[in-house]
Image (cartoon, rainbow, N blue to C red; front, side):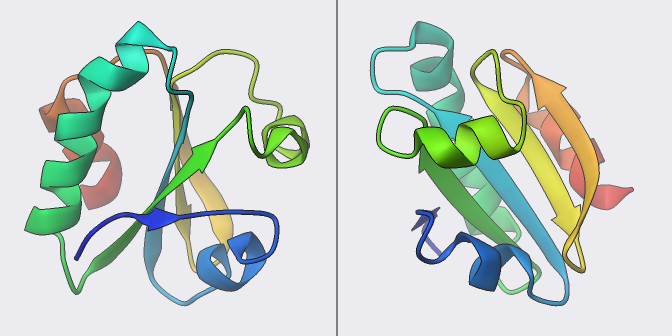
Length: 103
């Protein structure tokens, strides 16, 4: 399953689902975000059916970034059953992000 584009219009519906949701807060001009993008795509593929993967462009959705206190990007948050379970700021290897999902 491909990553979902998250906006303030659909964020609560997606993140509030039962199960695990990984959210990548990013921007197109951010080098580390571009480096992380292939890992996020691969996780969406590998965890299809078990984890929903969404992306928030902080330039287009500043309200969501502010709501979650995102001050540096990339920021990856994992929500489990609608609750924030884990956060990572900065570039991380795919294996580290996978560990966030497996906890």
